[in-house]
Amino acid sequence: MPEMVLPKSNSGVSLFAWMIINKFVDYLPFHRQLKTLRLEGVKIAESTYNGWLVHISKLLEPLYGNLVKSVLDTDYLKSDESTIPVQSKDKVERITFSQALTTQLKE
Image 1 (tube, one colour):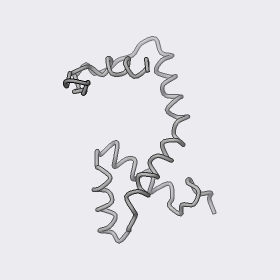
Image 2 (tube, helix red, strand yellow; image 1 turned 30 degrees about the horizontal axis):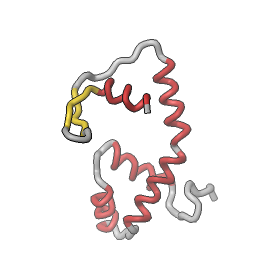
Image 3 (cartoon, one colour; image 1 turned 180 degrees about the vertical axis):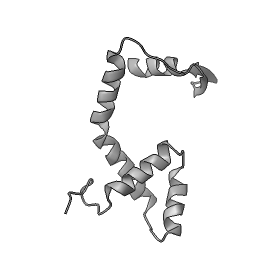
């Protein structure tokens, strides 16, 4: 039998992939994902589901690090200059993706 992705969990990689794609590609919040699973007869506690994301995120950190390194090592970077709302202490301001990325990399 293949080794489980998360210790003490009998859930497989396909469920974790489904949950990440639903969350970050399809923008489906966890409570709606859990509702979909309940309709299919699968009952998972919200705390368990949230915990899975934390553990999966830690497993994906090396991939994230490689992606950041790849972006930073390039001589040329293209990005969409549409603005996005960002909450600061007192107000919401609109910044570009490049500004957000630059701020993120400085932290």
